[in-house]
Image (tube, rainbow, N blue to C red; front, side, top):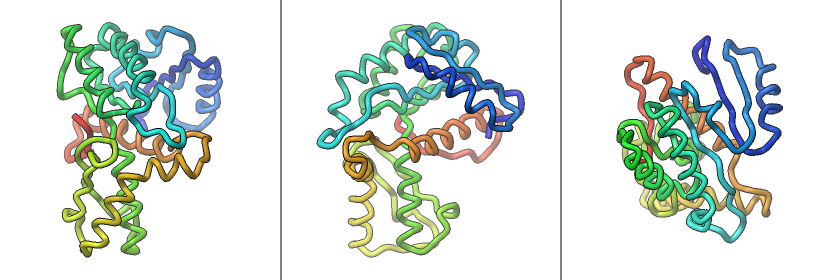
Length: 232
């Protein structure tokens, strides 16, 4: 959870956002929560140390992450332009798909504005990590909370590279490695198809975004040994 005294700002063009913030604010935490709606994200970005960008359209059956590019690229570009002006020193996590291309777009926008810092721009691939930990734990009858799976590369298909040989305390046959890797790489499609047109991963993505965001906060506060994987 966020440190006491933190501010959490939600932003979306949808008018329900302040209501979502009000709903969240009823959960007992020492965090101030505000919601902002409309075309201008400036009020939500002011003073931000960490920004997580998840805006965009979701996948539907038959689509891959690359199909989202035409719409989501423009959304990320516009938000990155605002970040460059309002909170240029913030750590920025890009969740919006296709991450493999939206992150470079954000990087180019920040470079053009003269505020790019390669240490502070991340493609959030934590969803691949938590899926890997869940699938490995189920296969090997382990506690998922005790399993750590390094996942490097990007966030689409074969660019997702789980390093199963580095998982401590377990071993895998070649067949298990092949099957696990394929499932991890296609887990997003598994959810999209299971929802039958109702969207893509949201609950697991929310948990993954929370995990990555809190890791950034811990690191900014000077905690040691904070390790998460990302697309950079």
